Image 1 (cartoon, rainbow, N blue to C red):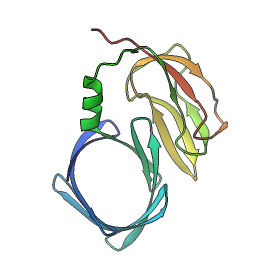
Image 2: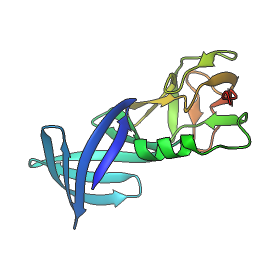
Image 3: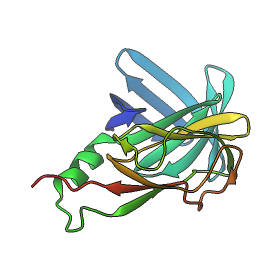
Length: 170
């Protein structure tokens, strides 16, 4: 099945097949062939070319954050995003929150109240299990609240940043 994805703000196309704990992905000229074992809801053990690789997956605002070898990848379904953008919503101005996808410690707060942020702009960096994850702005708007500081321990339900979404022109 073909997927149109946005990986860390870069559009990519991938053809993927999954069957019986086996995954085959083709992106451009690269082909990845791996077997996998689901360890838990957020942990998958991949075997790629005879090497085991741990992947940690967390639902995030409008996508998934995947952490492999200490690097985080924010992945979104490009087709779904375009479909959602084309649907008109009656309440265009609302407060939206940004929260950590896992229990973590805040490493850096990159914005301040009143800042105007663009979609995909880094807001906060958190660290869990010696892996850093950057939390991005889900859309453009104005930072209306920051509810954490460097060194704070945070949980997935904690609201870290409030962003007031700006009304889109009609």
